[in-house]
Image (cartoon, rainbow, N blue to C red):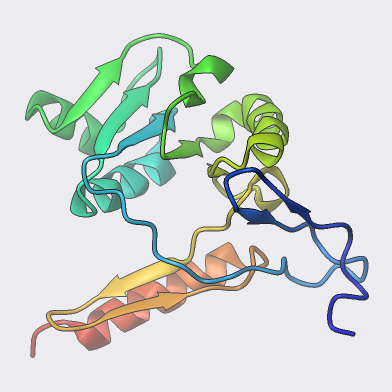
Length: 178
């Protein structure tokens, strides 16, 4: 069967299905969905360029964004903090920061914390993504290209983030206003 090559799947108490990479090393088995975040707390642990892109997407989705980082903020994040659209906690991120969040993004700079949060998230059914580290996630984040009347998502199951980024950029140019 299609599931025969997959490692064990677990169903959490909240109904989120978490799957692991297949034994053959194929792309992660995923279900494409869009998460409704309007008015919900979204936490970003770290403030690098990859996180800045997620902050922008979270704001467009209507999330209440919190960025936790003791070091320097990416300029895009600093601008959103200064404008009052993002709350910044200037300290090192902790695993407890994920509590109560609808979704959590972890910077690759905090990979050890991301791995730890991923294990806990699998047990509790939470959504945690350590950016560019699909093995330390309970979901993978597709590339998104937006045009005036169309949103296109492109996913590879966590296998090709660089290719997805390039395709997203190509589609954004194609979808742009003429």
